[in-house]
Image (tube, rainbow, N blue to C red):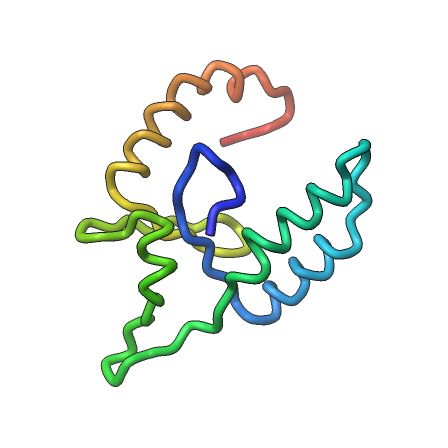
Length: 116
């Protein structure tokens, strides 16, 4: 599930990448007075709800109902690649995300040495 409050999506990892991600979160050094609370929030809202995905007889990924509800996945779904994982979005959330990203395009173009 998305660790970001204003975005709803479901992250889906290959199992070996998920294990690496969990270790990175557990080993991370979070600064500030609320570091413990931040790490606990990551565990409670991102790590603990994780479940291994099952496939049905036709090879489709079965997404648990609580994950579908939390990510707002109902009828129209978009999946996107995100380098080390992929994401499932409700179409409305994806559209809103893309509109917001479009507004940031000039900042991306200003990055020197980055080709997109």
